[in-house]
Image (cartoon, rainbow, N blue to C red; front, side, top):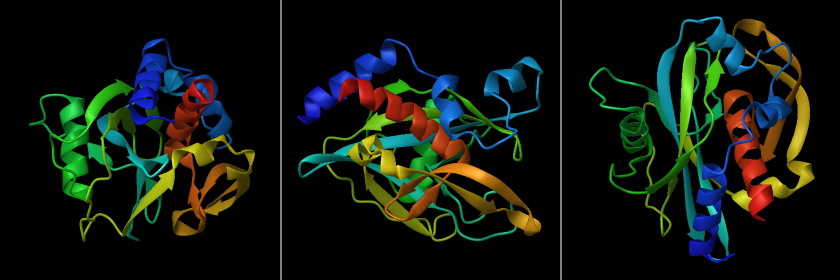
Length: 212
């Protein structure tokens, strides 16, 4: 698909209304409530933002994820979008997303056209309320991982999301010996993407389905 047409169609579809929690539900772990329920119950939360970065490569479109290093924390070793919590000095959440993308994968602050926002996702274990921003670049960016925060950068073909085969379930081991049973996830080139990141991707996948 032509890059400019792809960008226009995605932007228009986001503006026309998001699938939101209907799409989130397809990738929600068992026993997790919707974000709207947490907010209705005034759950304690910390504002955060991530960047869903899209760019053309050859005859397809790519998206960027990162692999977190192993550490003593809730999100150790997980696959996520580049992003993080809002700093008190950040003027708004778009700035947070751009700053975090710069700090984690060396994407310059001004790079990427904002074409819309996806629905917020609440992460119970860390109490983050995540706002995803969709940024589009006209060409493949030169990225490099922050040595402390990012183990590796993962770039995947967004059109692979349209395949039914990328959706799977399995038991996932969590920190301190606990595990989640029958967790839905995306298998993206052998990488297990689940939880909030998968819920965000699920919403983008529904948008992509309409566009394609």
